Image (cartoon, rainbow, N blue to C red; front, top):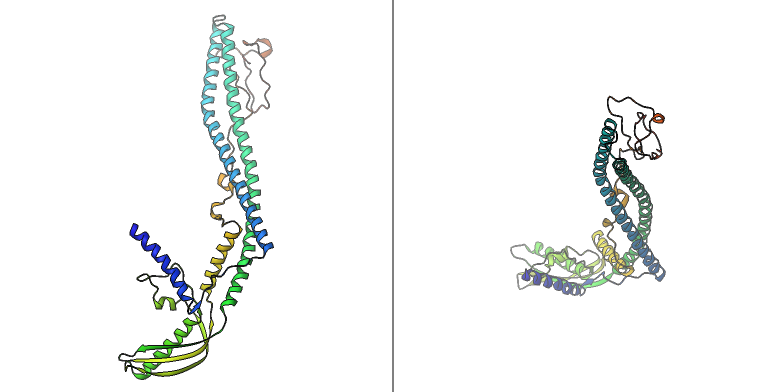
Length: 366
């Protein structure tokens, strides 16, 4: 592992050295960018607004998560509270039935205590359901706020990236114009002939001289993905990254050297040609520099709409305003009108908010 790290560091240093060497026969596009002061201040302000908007969305996400956790806890407690309320109702019903069969066998205090437990258990269930309803309402409100704030984030993002792109385009254009300057070059190149005939070797020598002239006047693009052989960029790899247009070509001094090589001198005007790949590399480098100047790049993939993360609210199929349970009369007992029979516990029943169904006339109420 240590050896690989050392290899990586040597590789990076080698790339830097090679880029510097490339300047001896070409141009580099890594010049400082220029941003108008007003644009720079505006971009910084937009970047700060984006950061603040992302914090708002993050805060809403945390609030939604907290309310959802509270809602889940309340929903989990409802089953337990309903079981306790049912037990309290059954216990009260048994005591009432026993008291009817054996009047006076159960003290009024015990009946009152059982009624209190029944009422408190029912109230606890109702309160828990109300908490769930309130949580749903709060989540819906937070989701609405999240949608508004996320729409504002998208607006700020679009405006910011559009203005950054304008700065990038201007600087790419300036650097392309600075690079595409014609240059007079004169170079000499020789090639081994081997078994080639003289015309073939002469033609290869001319092509080699043209390629060297192209390298001499080209804009060189060396990126971190270029393959390295023995910590050096091969000549073929450099050639694959350079482009230029040769005009006014004049070949001279064409002759054999040592009876095995052919040499050619070329004098030409070279105009660097900026490829689409080079433009994209330049734009990417400039964009990164702009982000660094105005406050740093934002990872938009980490920004999401909290309302979409929360999901829709599914209302519980529970009657929130259900009236408190009344104890039904015991089987075999004659039904007595409420006004003709005094309740065991002298308490007025809580007024129901609505009557979802018609109840049987009770013999006991609270």
